[in-house]
Amino acid sequence: MALKAFKTPAAESETEFIVNKSRFIGRAFPVETEEEALEILERIRQKHYDATHNCWAYNLRGASPLRRFSDDGEPGGTAGMPIMDTLIRSETENALIIVTRYFGGILLGSGGLVRAYSRSAADALSAAGSVIMTPCAEIEFVTDYTRFGGIEGFVRKNSTVRNIEFLENIKFNCLVETKKADAFIADIIERTDGRSAPRMTGEEYLPLAEK
Image (tube, rainbow, N blue to C red; front, side, top):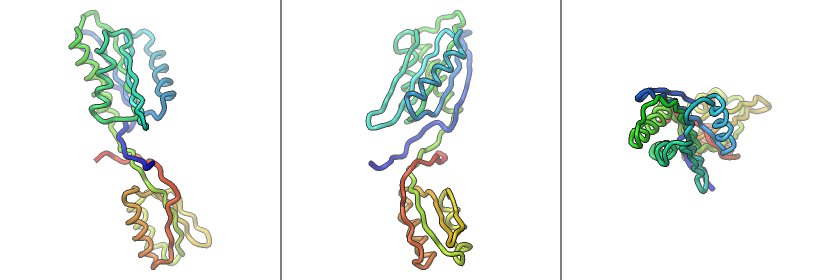
């Protein structure tokens, strides 16, 4: 099955605000597996063992997306679901959001809770930034030393170079967006006067800045 691009948090984040004396701490994390998400959740629970609530949601991509969330004692539908809705509306996958609340003594009501948890989740995602995990073809090709100077700049400008080996000839290993791979290969063949035979050896994701 061909890989498809998806958006995910660029990094971990932490944000905080206070509403009617209740303190909300929002955190977003890029995650790849449920095990990783649960390990992070346990770490945050231990760090904030004295918090009133540690509410969370994660959205993991796959043939059947894995979506789990928890209100952690808040009234049903006021915490975990708003956090999950934030992930879904923003089309963010392979992501975990945890919102920790320290109750300040003033009830917020169901609407207030939904707004607070939604805001905390959105703030955490915004602070984390995002990247597009982009399908890239791994391409290998060999050229001789006389053509190295004329081709290196092109390769570095139009691909992510993983390795260059200086052996009897020069072997390039690089990643190119899958949708641009055919054109890249054609350019290499033309620039080497047909003496190189680039080949795709695999496909993997590469995080690229969101446009």
